[in-house]
Amino acid sequence: MTNSLRPHSHPRAPLPPAEQPANGMPAPRSSQTPQQDPTAAAAEARPVKQRDAFFDNAKYLAIVLVAMGHAWQPLTDQSRAAEALYMVVYTFHMPAFILVSGYFSRSFDMRPDRLRRLVTGVAVPYVIFEVAYSFFKRWADDDPSHPISLLDPWYLTWFLVALFVWRLTTPLWKAVRRPVPLALGIAVLASVSPDIGDDLDLQRVLQFLPFFVVGLCMKPEHFHRMRRRDVRILSVPVFAAALAVAYWAGPRMNSAWFYHRDSAQELGAPWWAGVVMTLALFGCSMVLTACFFAWVPRRKMWFTVLGAGTLYGYLLHGFLAKGSRFWDWYDHPWVHQPLGETLLTVFAAAVITVLCTPPVQRMFRFAMEPKMEWAFKRDAAELARERGKAGAKS
Image 1 (cartoon, rainbow, N blue to C red):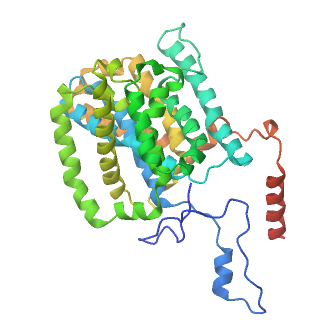
Image 2: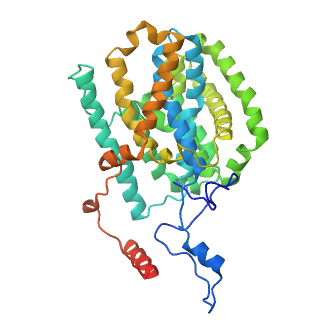
Image 3: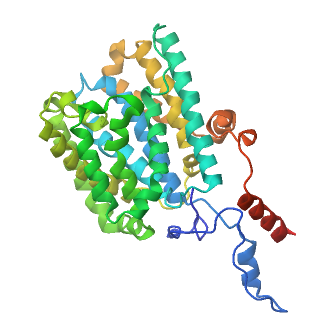
């Protein structure tokens, strides 16, 4: 989703610049000379865009933690250690994923081609998977009355609704003076407003909004700072302290706070608890997210290529995650033993890894990235860019 200026094999490849030439746009040309510098010719021969290994690695590792968290959830009632791990992971895994989504939405505007990509890459998959999940629940859970409602996202599809809304509002966040405090204020107000309801899962859309806006405001140097050696060393005791606090707080705290899908009143708490918990969880999430990024490899790894398929893995693994509950897989006693919990964790990581692979992407691209050229008219600016690209090649 982004570019790097040097090959991935370089151990200290810098992050991409904040703005790069749009796809299909020719790079600026210098005046022609009779003898061209071979180095310049080689530079022009390189591909204009390359994916940055750091962000692909971060997305893959975050989605693995998402799958692990879903696998641990049924274990939390009987295992305090699983509950502590669950709480720590849920503090930062979705914030990290959302922050990266915001970082790559910085260039979004209302240009027709980007709006088409938003529709085909977010809105259409939402409709397809919301319907597919609804039919799956009817069949697997023996619940024929489960409604098919595009206004009430079920399970994982809330993220697509949220991403659609967040990205549409990107020009607004780029225009206001202090976007992060404003977004945080909106999240606080949502946490004390039980009348928002369940339509489009707006509680989650609004309460997770600050992480997207933080990503919009971030620059490459911010990621450089998080990847310093001293930050990496400091992150170890921070994670250890977070686990210790989670182990202590597990039996005393409602883990639904980490889902950001309910107001304080709906969780049986006074309204002011929503203000306190929203601000406290935002701070904890940002600290642990920085610690997570500090340990993300910056070079190309065996799993780097899987970073392009994280949304595939996210949506597809939901069928197995929910099916495990519907089919009572957790009723077996061995699953709740240390060895069983370890095997379950490895299994969740393996499944999400397979679902992010290129063959799976090719198989489900019709649902995740449909071209739908028949649904959109071509605008003059896009046609001009294509003509310019064809002219540059000739």
